[in-house]
Image 1 (cartoon, rainbow, N blue to C red):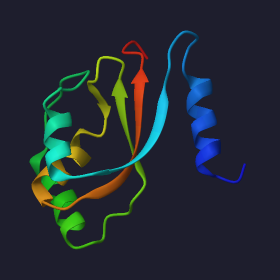
Image 2: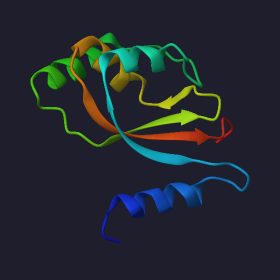
Image 3: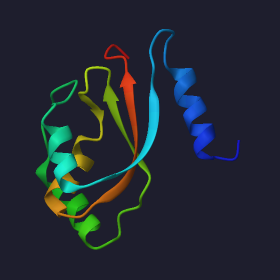
Image 4: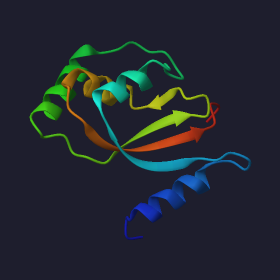
Length: 108
């Protein structure tokens, strides 16, 4: 596999059960968008470590954040993976490029 976007999208489609539509979308998340996504909440509540968000935000502000990590959302628009990254974008004040996967069944 050559690690192209098409390969990644194919893997995501194969991982989604029949009857569910998962999508991989390249997107630049602005701080305003991050705040909007955060307002939908998370699939599973957990304790938040503010120091992780602070570290990520500083890395984003300094231009050291590596673009292309994945944010995963359920079919109910809740965050499955990516809360810290979204909170860091909101805090940093700078837009960051991600891949967004949406439509993942909540029970996975």
